Length: 208
Length: 163
Image 1 (cartoon, one colour):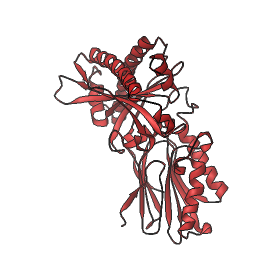
Image 2 (spheres, rainbow over the protein chains, first blue to last red; image 1 turned 60 degrees about the vertical axis):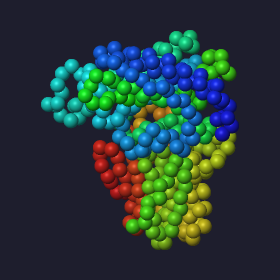
Image 3 (cartoon, each protein chain N blue to C red; image 1 turned 120 degrees about the vertical axis):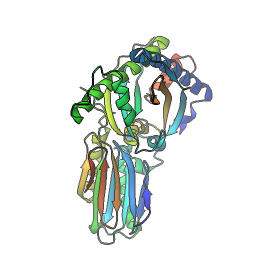
């Protein structure tokens, strides 16, 4: 818990602002990619007890699709773009320039997964670009990894990352909403700075 | 049928028969059950990490394999379980994301390390692991009933199995 107590409201505001700038850029990138307006919510930065991380954004059994990208170097951080499983297909189909409904189920899924990986890559890459601009850090990214699974099992990764050193996890979440479609479509960008990297980010922003 | 008891992250729950113990959405974590096959006293722990030695303090011993297994046994003995009748079943330890060339990365391989550490702790304690469903890349929800002594493992897409 001592690790949690180091962060004041002032620090949380600074981290939220990073989320704001990053997701703003991500929303713009997604908007360009889809040729549609994309709105974003106000980011929420919070310290969550690791034992509650799995159920923090919904029931742990909710079926979701998640794209994960990491940057490691001067600053290490994971970024997740998460979307409800049934919305993921709609999102993917927006950039698939052909009708794939005649194909087999596993083929469809593999095409959609790669479309989603690309969308996630563009969204999360834009986030990191913005972060790179405000910090001056070069932030090389890994190739995107896609998982379709239960929300809880995906968030397990976050819990165990933070669990090694402490009892709570720093999560910065922003929701994106794609406009101009019949159906509500959107996803969530979650920034999860590696435990040791938070201080490093705050120092760079001049607030530590 | 007993009301199911949810075993959250790093939680450790023991109960006399009849009981139903469940854990939802296990990713890299492990759901470990140890039960007395005669009295049906059982306990479940939701293990998050393999090794407590890196941790500064351990508010919840259920969090680490090396502290969870001894504590689970101790709690079972308190409820009158007999060592020779104890058996274990476990599920979990998946690797949710795979990154090319990064399989050995400590962050992504935590599932595997959890499986290894839990298996080793059971071996050291002399508890026989009778069945398990571990590894892979899919999350699991698990339910253990002292009625059947079966571990029901659910995964998205591939359905349900009993171990």
